[in-house]
Amino acid sequence: AKKKAWSGRFSEPVDAFVLRYTASVDFDKRMALSDIEGSVAHATMLEKIGVISAKDLEDIRRGMDQIRSEILAGTFEWQLELEDVHLNIEARLTALIGDAGKRLHTGRSRNDQVATDIRLYLRSEIDEIVRRIEHLQDVLVHQAKAGSDMIMPGFTHMQVAQPVTFGHHMLAYVEMFERDRERLLDLRRRVNRSPLGSAALAGTTYPIDREFTAELLGFEAVSQNSLDGVSDRDFAVEFCSAASLIMMHISRLSEELVVWMSQRFGFIKLPDRFTTGSSIMPQKKNPDVPETARGKSGRVYGDLIAMLTLMKGTPLAYNKDFQEDKEPVFDAIDTVKDTLRAFCDMMAGVEPQADVMYRAAQMGFPTATDLADYLVRHGVPFRTAHDIVGQTVRAASERGCGLEELPLDVLKSFSDVIENDVYEVLKLEGSVNARDHLGGTAPNQVRRQVARWEAIIAER
Ligand code: ARG
Image 1 (tube, rainbow, N blue to C red):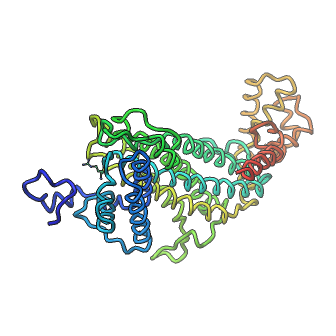
Image 2 (cartoon, rainbow, N blue to C red):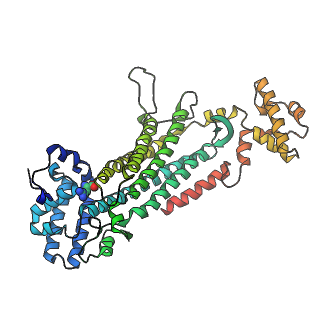
Image 3 (cartoon, rainbow, N blue to C red):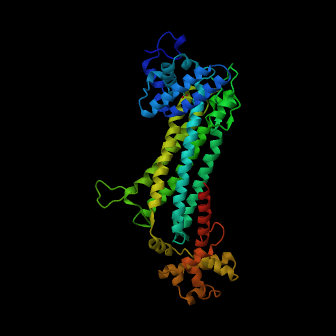
């Protein structure tokens, strides 16, 4: 067995199975480029304070450039015996440049190194996820624009409630994804703090310049306590929490797509490339993408619970447990990115069926509230109006017709304030047009919101 970076005080080599059990290189090699970036910043600082020579720094930079190329080319030889990404890269560096490679780890520990790496890595993934959310919002705003006066039933309890527009419905998701975007940008500030220089846990005896490395790495601030610096994973929990909410929103949208594309609804068509068939039933076209996404929300919630449980009860400062933070965080990143990618494409291809939605909106007396409001405008107290309209709905239901199909004399038998102009109010168009205030479903308001979002998106 090869000599380990830390094996000076050991009398026998580590057990082969224990090595495999405790190694992380299989998954933490994803952070290799961040690890190199952090190491170069650390070396630059060591040179600045006179701990290593200008020649050492030059060798380290050159060695790291080569290692980066090897990793990008896929020729870097990762070795399990070297445990993790950090020791693999350090060993290769020393093989390439000799003693200068052995000086790199001065005033540093893998504990602050790994805490730095995961923050750098997560920071760039957050930026990519934010871009994908913005893309999805753009797609949904386009759908909203095209559907700004497309009437569909709005539901509560899955029962027809009041007519809304398809555009209004799409914009509701744009709002949800905006909060997701804000959450990511907010937690990014807490990701973007430099733990580098915390060393193992207590700091180091060298006169390090933590502000300098933080600046080189684009960190906004430096963590102010070395024990906290190496043991804080709150930011990873926060990320998994924000990722869970993204997936929750995607899952709700998925459920609506599944329902909308069922034969009983027929509200939308999905392009064939986002659906799959059945191996036994030749007629089938199944909404596999939304269903897969709905299912994948569960695994991201699992990542969040794994992170919370992993951190619970761990004493200060670093513990090996923390190595287990990588896989949940990576899984949440991958799942959210893939899901957003699929949804950007798929939502652009959703074809709302305006006529089907309109006919569905005519069923279930969706303008009953409008009739009550009409009575109120003619001096009837709302509770009395509610009761009158309830009786009217019962009459229409018994006749098997809509409210707008009841003759005027029948309507008048329930309240003599009702006149011929009531039919405007009972129409679906009248109903949506009347909800013409900030946040309302009126096509006029939906168009205003679309314009507001278009301006926001153009600014990004
Ligand atoms: N690979 C470890 C991790 O991911 C970092 C190494 C720290 N290990 C240690 N024994 N102090 O957390």
